[in-house]
Length: 296
Image (cartoon, rainbow, N blue to C red; front, side, top):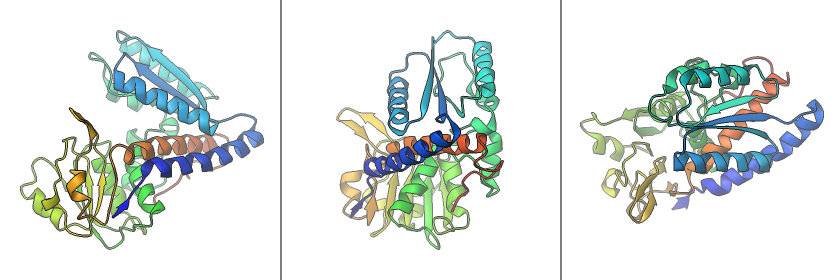
């Protein structure tokens, strides 16, 4: 079995971006800038933001953190996003989720300028993704596709099952897998909690993508021999962090599989950096408007 090492692959991507950023900064007189908004004291979010700041420092991206208390008003966040949208030193704006109770994330995400939406959550970017147009792609699905590309595991002409239909992972991933290209052109089935024959659907698939948020949900009897299994889930259980797939038993059946941790998580952060650089290049005129990287 091939272990799809997202941690090592993300390190390679950061190295590539570091070289590119150094050249761009010398040309344009400033580095790309990423603003991250963190509201409240959620421990997991604190860790995620620290990791993102560390990644930015490694690559040479300027990081502008905005840490706010949990009782921050919706209007204060709206005003902050407006300022960041107008700030010429900021190329990307990221609102760390989840937000504390009492705050509505959707209006805030939609308030971020689409060209600075490095998470790829804005309806304009989602709509362009659905139409196969260049856009800032959601980071986790983009990380999945990039990992397949780096290991040369094409989905073209294959059957793929995506387990989970969230707007952050499952839905956009199913769209990207169905788009034309060597790492698209799959026949995709999007499964969810109401799918009556979920196990049978998975068992027929050449590629299984699990993003359902249930520890070890996908078991060995749901994966056909030789299938590629990509585990997007990360769940905390008594013995530590595990994915949505039962790695210890599936790894003897699958031809390739991601570990948890060390699989898609690092790739997601790497795609955030790539989106920030792409947004910066468009901002500085190195790319024409709306010619950000399309799915290939």
